[in-house]
Length: 364
Image (cartoon, helix red, strand yellow):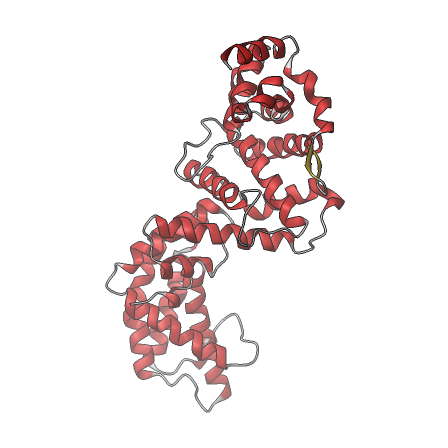
């Protein structure tokens, strides 16, 4: 076997890797999604698009995308399939390709399993994400979402994309990436809801990952209720809610948010965006209205920069005015104008929390 391998290695090196690109047209990726050459073209474009957003070299990322699958056409990989990627890297190095381009041919398959190492450079990350996203969006796009079995390993691919984004702190939005992958697949796709389906699927992977990491289900659900599509932002929110949960005021505020949600759910109709200060009668509602207004302004910088922990720590100060409001104010007053004004106040209060998570879902 070793002699065979040496023979294949020497034979393969007689031709540069890039010369094998046209041969990828002979290999089917998936019959509705085309050949591996079609997939290569999509990976190349998507890798360049991602590279630009994460400040990686765009041209090198596209070059790595173009070469990514060429080693599948070599004798060595044909005979020893588990050498894919590794051989691509060696052959590319032999051909004089850029070092980071060659490395990306190996690292495109990372992470290969839960807990595996991540790609080590921006170029490798761009190609790895492009390859995985193309597969995920493609398979979902032809209506073959994994049920029990997962022949295209979409769960693993999704977790891989999420880990690369979160652990590198990349400011990437799944909606944007999925939209780009979908556009590159063009009219090959038949599932009109592909974007929403893929986002739901990937958010589900988040749930599994963060549960394994020791976060409780209610914390994860509180964040997922907001459907945050930026993975690094999701991570910040979960950590902030986890920290908030330990605060003394958390239980009372979670209960208050639940109560507010129930009251608002019973009201049918539009509420104004602003409260009418002239309609405030009770001291407790005046105090809460002032606190909510001050908070709304004070928290803008924290929300803008994603500093959710600081925001929730400040929101914990609302506990006393909220308790006093419910003890002393009749929300569903007979006077329609009073009632609407109080509901608007509660709606604005709830929206402050909802900018981060639905804390009403937190359990004791």
